[in-house]
Image 1 (cartoon, one colour):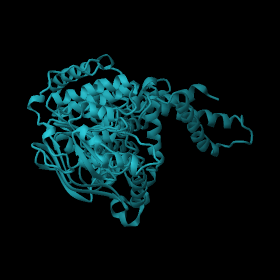
Image 2 (cartoon, chains in turn brown, yellow):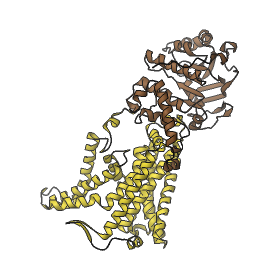
Image 3 (tube, chains in turn orange, cyan):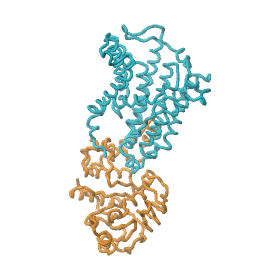
Image 4 (tube, chains in turn red, green):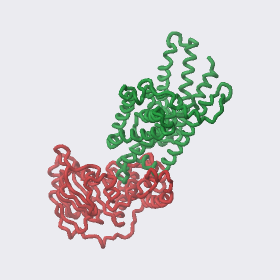
Length: 285
Length: 328
C-alpha cells in the first residue's frame, strides 16, 4: 500500500507562515468561504462561525474537543444539515439551500465519521456508483443502454484508483466484507471518483491501526499533491502536526484559533479548550 | 383422499392466472423493496387503481385497451402522491402512509360517493369482453388428463405470463444498468449515495412509480380474469401475499418473484386441498371442521414463512454470503 505520489506542488502553494494566525483571517485564494454561519439545536449553539476561509490547495485540519461542532459544521457546509442563518460559497458559487447531492456535484465531497460503505455492493461497484456523468444512471439512459463505453472508462479509472489504495485484489468482493480500515480507504477512494476539488474527511483515521493511519495520511497528502484541497477533522495532534498546512480549532461552535499547526498548538485558547474549560473530561486531542 | 387430484389442483394453481398476476405484482414490489429498500406496505393500492382504471374506462364505453394506459397513469399518479410527501422522511413513514392509502382507496371505491364510477360494493362486471373476443385459441380443453385448461383461461394465462416475462426483462434492463446500481446504493445507505452526488429522492420516486405501474398491470390481469372489479377484492392481505412471494424468491433477485409466486400458489392450493381432504376424512375428528380450513391454511403459511426466515432468510435465489454481511 504505497502512498508515493508525484513530487508535491508545494512550491506554488501559498505559504501559511505569511498569513496572520487569527480566527476568520482572509486567505489569498480561498476555495470555500463561510460567513455568519449559525446552527443551534434548541438552546445549544452547535455552530457559531463568523467567518471561515479555506485556502485552495491546502490541507486544513479541524480540531476541537468533543462536541465542539466540527461534524455539524461539516454537515452544514455539505448540505446535510441546514443552518438557521449564514452564507457560504464554493468557488464563488453560493451554497445556501443547495441539497447535499448538488453540493457533491459542484465539487465538495465528504466522507463520514462512521464509515458508510455500501455493504452489499462490491468494492468496484462502490467506486463506479460514484463516477460522474454516467448517462446510464438516468431512467431513459438505462433503457436505451448506451452507457457501456462510459462504464468501461470508469472501470479503468476505478481499478487504477483501487490499485493505488491497495484494494484492487478485493474489487469483486462485497464492501461489507472489508475490514474497518479498508472501508476507510474505500470511502476515500470512492469520494475521489466524484472528481472533487474539495474533499471533506470526517475523522478519516478514527479506529484505524497506526500502520494504516500512516498509509491514509499518505493518501491525504497525495490528494493535495494532485491539486485538491482537503479539510479534515482529526483528534490526534501528532497527525495534525505532521500533515496540515493550516489548523482551525473549534470550541463550543466557535472558531477560537486558526493558524499553522505549530502556532495553534501553542495558542493558550486552544490549550484552554482542551484542558482548561473542559477539565474533568477526557481530552481527546 | 384423492392425492392425485390435490397435486393436480396445486399444479394448475402454480401456472394459473393468479400465480402470474402475483408474479407480476411481486416483480413491482421487488423493485421497490428488494432493490431500493422502500417499505411499500400498500402495494395493493397500485393493483386496485390499475384494475379500477381499466374497468372504469371500459365501463364508460371507451375501448378496453385504453384502460391500460389509464390504469398505469393512475398508478403513477398514486406513486407521486404517496412518494412526494414521504420519501424525504425516514423509511417508516412511507410504510405507514402506503398501508393507509390502500385501505383508503378500497373504502373510497366502496363509498356511495364514488358509486357512479365504481358501482360501490357490487363492483364493475363484464367489462373485458373485448379481451376475450380477440382470443385466438380455438374452443376446447387443453392439457393432459385432469391437468387442463379451457381456451378462455389459457388465453388469460398466455397474456399474463407474457406480461410477467416482459416486466422481468424491463426490470433486468433497469437493475443491471448504472441506474440499478444507484438504487441498490440507496438501499444500502441513502446518505452515502447523497454524498456521491445522487438525487436520492428522485430515484426513490422513480422506483416507487415504476414498481407501482407494474403492480397496476397485475391488478388489470386479475380484473380481466375475474371479469369483475369489486372493492373487497383488494384487501391489505394482497400486499402481504406479494411480500411473502418476494421473500420466498429472495429480495433483490430478478426471477425471485416469479419462482416465489409459483411456489407460493402451489403450496397454498396444496395445503387447501390437503386440509379439506383431511377434514372430509374425519382425520381431525371434531377438532376441525371445513370452515376452519381457510384460517388454518393462513396459519400454516405463516409458519412456513417463519421457517423460511429462520433457515433460508435470503430466499431461494439469494446468496447466503450477501445475507450474512454486516450492514453498517
